[in-house]
Length: 315
Ligand SMILES: NC(=O)c1ccc[n+]([C@@H]2O[C@H](COP(=O)([O-])OP(=O)(O)OC[C@H]3O[C@@H](n4cnc5c(N)ncnc54)[C@H](O)[C@@H]3O)[C@@H](O)[C@H]2O)c1
Image 1 (cartoon, rainbow, N blue to C red):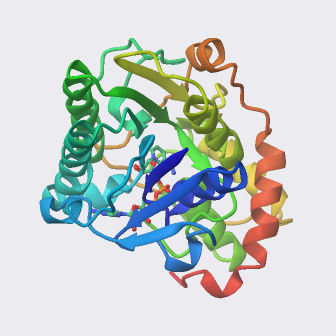
Image 2: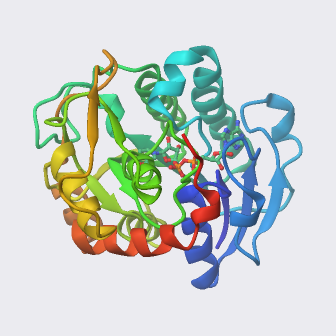
């Protein structure tokens, strides 16, 4: 297969691109390096530095035929979306509109999209894909808008998969970006042995999914025909974890005492309080299930992070 991976210089996209190459597929990575790094693009992938939210960029994509677009390029931070909502809408929703139109024009049959738990807002957990969506953040709105744009493209013949990913973590996550990724942010503080500021309650509940489990679902969906229309899958571990429990597990993974200082700061109105996934649909449709436990995943991530000490930004 020849697959376009947008955002392939970022965390999830670079893992996906690498695994697709290893499985023998031909991969074209498109990324504007806003938060991604050129060095994260795996060897063997064709790389194009382009902003996929700009109409003129689409004309610069290579000719030839493609089997699928995996669209992961995004402004991926909830807090940053509150600072610059227009940019967020442009980077996330306009890019989806342009790329889906490009697929229809070029007869690229399949589109796989990196959606988010943020689209649900405060839904009851475990949340199923048919729950009402009422996002609380601009980021969640732009992700939901993308899903609707893809629904329209599907009516014109594009086969679409939307992965509503919960908190994905693992080696390769950006330890220098203190606005995105609960695990990588806390780890950046812990690796420096300093107090961890936590914006919002320690009693908030999240669902953490190891990177290899997330990428395996994408691959399973790519390597079989998609149903016509839109398929929507939650990707999470299906297990509720409080922020306090996450910090305890992280402290154990980096061998710091449970008494390490943590400071709870006021949260934001855009933050969801408690959400975890029902993953029955992905289990049934893809034969997928998460396999890496939180302690094992955090241990692997901490071992990797210690080797990246130079990358950690001093807050
Ligand atoms: N990591 C998670 O927990 C998580 C959870 C839910 C959804 N997602 C979604 O998954 C995708 C990947 O997330 P990630 O954690 O790897 O984020 P990331 O920030 O590491 O990767 C995003 C990539 O997109 C690139 N990019 C941004 N704007 C672009 C543009 N206009 N044109 C081209 N490239 C652009 C960035 O340079 C970066 O390499 C995103 O769409 C994100 O919203 C991530």
